[in-house]
Amino acid sequence: FIRAVVLSPLVLLLDEPTSALDTRNTHRVESVVNQIRIQKKTGVVWVSHDEEQLTRVADAIMTVDKKQLTKKYHTAGVA
Image 1 (cartoon, rainbow, N blue to C red):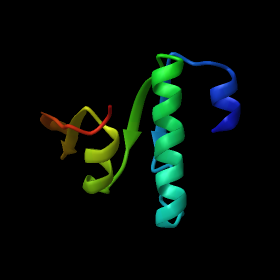
Image 2 (cartoon, one colour; image 1 turned 135 degrees about the vertical axis):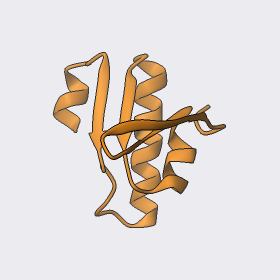
Image 3 (cartoon, rainbow, N blue to C red; image 1 turned 60 degrees about the vertical axis):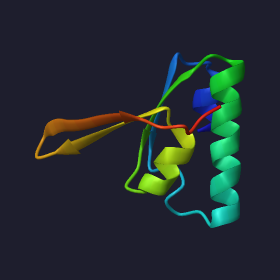
């Protein structure tokens, strides 16, 4: 993750980045990613099975069912 951020990508692709973390560190990662998104104007694709988390970190959520993009909705998640 740090290596990717140092390279200043246009988009971060995050696949379950907090799945092995406790609640405290999960919130820390969410905060750091949000700061990177804002300060570096980096797009973020965050893959997760945790819908509660996605409502905190995303401004739009898309779901995949049977290899089809099935839903897209906006959240009040990111600032």
